[in-house]
Amino acid sequence: MRLRRSGRVWRLTLRNGVRYLGHRARTSVTRGDERRAALAQQFTIRSSDDVARELGQMKGALMKFGQLLSFIVEALPEEAQRSLASLQSDAPPMAPETAAQVVAEELGKPPQRAFLDWDAVPVAAASVGQVHRAVSRDGRDVAVKVQYPGVGAAIESDLANAQALYRLFTAFALKGLDAKALVDELRTRMRDELDYTIEAANQTAFAAHYDGHPFVHIPAVVPATSTRRVLTTEWVEGIGFAEFMATAAAPARRRAGESIWRFAQASVHHLGAFNGDPHPGNYRFSRDGDVTFLDFGLVKRWTGGEWQQLEPSLDAIVVHRDPERLVAAMESVGFLHPGHGLAPQQVYDYVSAPYQPYLSDEFTFTRTFVRDAMQRIIDVKGPFADVINRLNMPASFVILDRVVWGVSAILGKLEVTGPWRGMLLEYRVGGPPASPLGEAEHAWQRRALAG
Image (cartoon, rainbow, N blue to C red; front, side):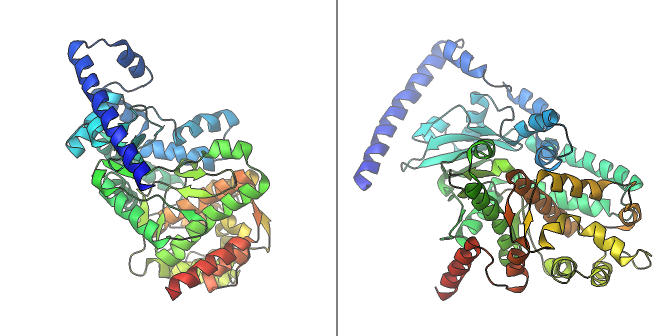
């Protein structure tokens, strides 16, 4: 194995060196090379100016909002969902020269020299950066995420607009919503995404925590070629969500859905940090339902006491199923202000909408469930208008709420059936494993504790 890998390194070094010299020779002789022109035509963005202009139109925070809509808002027409779904992995990429310039600025050399092999055509393009396939200097297949020039300014502009939108929204809907605190929380998380050294640290921490896990797979970071705007990780084979949906049998869907759900729960409850960007483009699937988790740029970590403030409300809904307890818990942490005058049952019926899967012994997630639950939450003129007008969302909850809806939407598309209540009680009160994957995870936890 070592000899074979060494041979591969040697061959790639030689081939890449010849390729790079040839590239330099061709570009020095002619600027109108037909192959370069043909390649450039595959891309929407042709220069740094175009990058900045395009970012203002669809990348950054606004694009992430579109990504979220594409898989959560089931009420949208199919045509609209399909259009928005393209944001999950098919955003317009940078031209090869622009991506290469970012790599050269960050690593001190062009990609053809920083890596043994470099594919100029990206395999994915999303809201903050695009991903290229390459081979590291030590012969590993790697994925290299390159950040778009100008994306930081685009996100700051988007978030400034978001603050105005929140103010407008609170004028008509959530009267007690602390818009500034929410926007500050979102701004902090989005700013983290702009620094790939933070993402690299996040991914390394998650990979270490889940090392040896039976169904959570996280690729390792390659530090030698990772900087603030370039992130290199081990390459992962697999298929995207759309192809998995089109080809996977029911057992594979069940395994994939439960794996995604348990990864979110274990991260929230045990690790104290969780990925706040659960859209389908951040997963790779095997045919039998194994999942590899990607993109750790938007990670929320509980600060002292944050989760402890939220736990009583969650337990009142899913563990005790007690409206009176729920209202008391919500008042204690600012979800509801004292003197609100709301009936506890009315509050419970509204707040429990996304938690219906955990109120019965078995439940099947469907797109209809997600659509109806979301419609109940946002219907400002419906039967829960009084609750909506008096409800506040603490800033610490906004990213978790995104995860709750995001994971539910994925499970709804997969149409997964399971004992979700028993599974959640594993994490909430240390209940016994409610499924085979739960048993496997408990065995892994025991081994980790013993080690």
